[in-house]
Length: 360
Ligand code: SF4
Ligand code: SF4
Image (cartoon, rainbow, N blue to C red; front, side, top):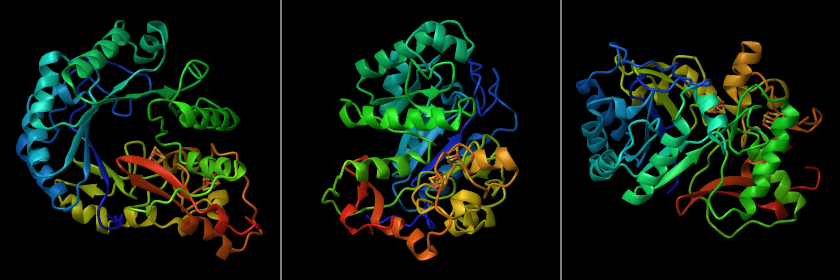
């Protein structure tokens, strides 16, 4: 199925609450022990679910937080979403995952949970999560999910504290060179690992995948494309709804597209000027603006905003130097020749290498 990301996102992340028992260093939600009284009420939550279903696509709804399991009405919300045809997944913090909650998640139709593990030892993980015992709780959550037959994924945030220990996504604390080195390491691991290994919010991983495939002389697998997913998905197949209903391109990009308390999500996603600009790679500036990988990668808009105050500026954590003399026409070639496709539930990068001009 071809997916038009100007019309509907493939993923919606909804921060159902900010309540959480952990106090992680990197927490986007600045989680707190108790729910914010302004968070969407149950009736508003149901309305949002119906609105997401109105995209009329099998959107993946990520129930995140805070800890979604701290919200008393989370099971009816998830059940309504699953019944409406959405593919519901959840990212609990781990403190509330029990055999009973796993069984309930399965009953209401949650298809997968994600659990964070930020190191191979309790010292590394608990130091990051700032709660003693979080490592054991994460391991127990994984065991309960496995025993209960609930599919799971493990998320790892790579920072300086765990870079030599682990795997996963990145924070500003490491240098662009360390970032590149980590991307290369993850790419190598992904080639042989018995589980699916992927990067989130490391947009130039797409560029590195193309470069690595090209240097390995690999040809394209013979699948037909079903949809295209850019490295930075903010506003392009992805959007974020906060606990009070504010909508943004992603949870790390503090720019407001609208509020679901004032307009339907369908309208905000399709019509807001912020989202329209995020979907237009020709508006990118700096190195990203002249880069032949910009349609495929896009650079992190949140890091650009953080570094320069301009969300369309170049990604500060990419080491790639595009050739400013590359003609604009050739800059667009990569977009048409390399695509990420959803294939049997996995993402695959398709590179039609034999059709890339030698100049690139
Ligand atoms: S702006 Fe950055 S953090 Fe947000 S979706 Fe894009 S790559 Fe990810
Ligand atoms: S310069 Fe920008 S668009 Fe090009 S690979 Fe780096 S981050 Fe991506």
